[in-house]
Amino acid sequence: MTKQQMKILVPVDGSDQALQAAVYAAKMFPKDRSEMVLFHVDAQNPDLGKSIAGNPLYDSQMKNIDKWMATDHKAMHQFMDQAVSRVVAVGIPETSVSVKIKKKEDRVIEEIIREAREGYDAVVVGKTGKSRLKDKIIGSLAIKLAGRLQRIPLVIVDGEPKTGKLLISVDLREEAFRCIYSIGELLEIQNFTIAICHVARCAAMKNAPETFTPHRDGEHICPLRDVECICPSIDKMKECLEEAGILSESISDLILESSNPVDSTLDLSREQQIGSIVVGRRAIVPFVEELISGRYSQKMLKKMQNMALWVVS
Image 1: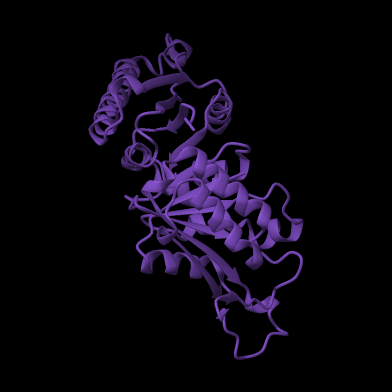
Image 2 (image 1 turned 60 degrees about the vertical axis):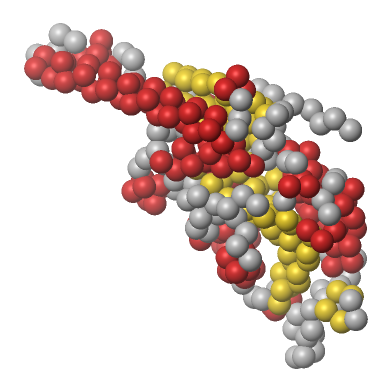
């Protein structure tokens, strides 16, 4: 069955990480059916010069202000040229890459969300921007997008992730199958090695025997097994991946016993040299969890290094 053409939105701010995000997207998404849009929100105030013109306090600085604005615009256009060249070098046809620069009319995050709703199939963004200090103090744009963007898969890139393997971190069945469906539609799935990972929290296993064994006689033995347990559904997930075109030997599954799902998942990804982690974004999160511990994806974002996090909602 022929898959449809896709539009991938890559918001950029001129930073090195934004460039790496664009390159990652070019490597991951199908080169023959992906249209990439490099999107920049120009936050400069075009009326700045007009608003201070004639004010004797700023007369001596007008030339410097005009020069600074012109230099900034030139730097962004040079960045866009570089980004297009890097993406094309990876294999995306030049005719499938476009640049869109929009004057800022609202907060940058609102501009990106508004643009993403214009028929895009995924959004790929760098984890950090040009100002790492601002990202650290008030939170990066990527983390804010992870909490706001809905119905469109969001991919957040840190460093230069490897692109041959994916880890699907599963907890609830509905989220897990949504993730599998999403990557099956967005990627040429047969080109990847995929691991399905479920972390059983020790805190919830207080009634489990001390000699807990994740596997026994080929079956998944999980102390959390009940109507909500995801373990019995893992074989069905593997079948779905096989139906999408991936060979069975390229699929593995792991059930981990840990009280810290984030650290365990990241450790596993590093050990297996997996560059991309796919998680589902819950539409509704209990207030206490949101307030005290935060969303799983946001905690993952803060700790991951040289990885890409796919947040599927």
